[in-house]
Length: 617
Image 1: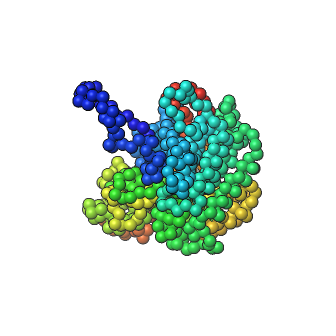
Image 2: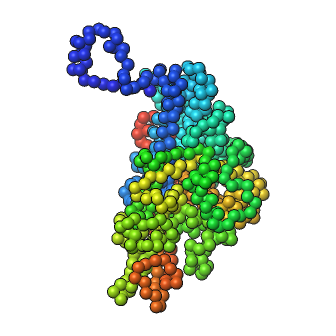
Image 3: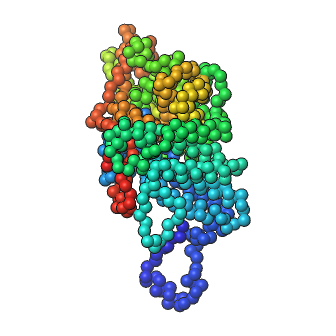
């Protein structure tokens, strides 16, 4: 874009005296910038301009405050950062969280959309000779415009559609919101165009491709078919939506929801036919050990698991970014990490037993050993008390030579007397207690357990999965259930479960839908789906709005046990596990139906008087 640099009047006058009316001086090009006109006639510069559009992804979902902590997946450990504005439904047009992630900020997305429109305008009729490159770059720009718009639509509903570059001096910059349906159609059209333009194009990691365009189309059509956007159903479930005078801005006021589910199913199937996922051809469950490793391979994008990624944000450890320091942001304080987004007990309880049955605290065997015999994905996702982990740092190693997570309080013998040892990874720890978990758990997913990676000072190179193959599998299964095609849904769900080492689902009807939703919950955990899924299913009140639960763990010495340095050991200890609500003084969650859509900030409405506010604000 054109930029203007200003220098002082004194300097201008002095230069004017020295140069007189020298036209060559007046027309001098800046040495540290390139004009917009020069960019689009040069293929290398045009490619650089399109590459810059990807900066709109920021760190993907690897922000210090993850979207997971607005849901029943996690809580954010450190108060005063603003995330409770969302979880406590205190959001208003004058009180909107300043998300650390620009993908969640209205103004930032429209700034990026301007860049995509500039690229599209200049590449539609390219000014350089490399037609194949121009076609590829146009496809990438169309994909990124669709991506940015889908980010806006799934948070705000219908937004103004801008498909051209506005210039200075135009008569009017105010724009009305387009309907939800118009926005979905616009995104789908961009995805279709991108898929066609990118067909057969070989692109590197982190760039758009045909499969990614199809996957994005699958996602937006799944959302479009969901209950939140079917106004008759949404109105029946919410008086706030029922009372909204502009329902076309947030959903479909007419048409057939079944036909929308059919479109969602077809879009998902197109992804499944286009790409190949990771180990999706199994006909029986793998072993629990293999299931855990498979899930870890996908979350770390290694050992073949990288084939899952259709579109991702990549990182290098040489650059300090939130994405490369996810382990520092979220790891245990007993390893000098920050415990930012910690799993809730609500999430832990939703992992099934290995036989496919539900975990139940009323079952004495489950309650006595809650971390045994669970879905293998649990162990690759969550660090629990007693779990083996990396070697402790040198200053902590003498306190824990076993290298196990300690999130409880345990009896030990000191000077011949029974004393309490607070776990090294608790908020009573002698190691950075202010960074201790409030829930009794830590994240494992997206954190490499390689002992050579010291999380407090070594960066990771784990990509953020913006779109992956398994999401399309789940999308296809959901649409199939909604269309009454239970057998088709089970086939694809069981491919996912067999890879994880879990037994086949055999349910039908409502039970199948409940199992599907739980399967989606545990498979896509921490990948920014739960916040959107709970809203589009309209189950937010009983999920996002419930108070997070935590675990309290006590280890009592068995008679005759003489332990002076704590280590997890059921031979020496009787362990008790007590589920409790998170202290409401720290976070007091509630759900108000206005939170189905984000509000437009007061400044945005002041800038654009045609912008109609969302319901409940």
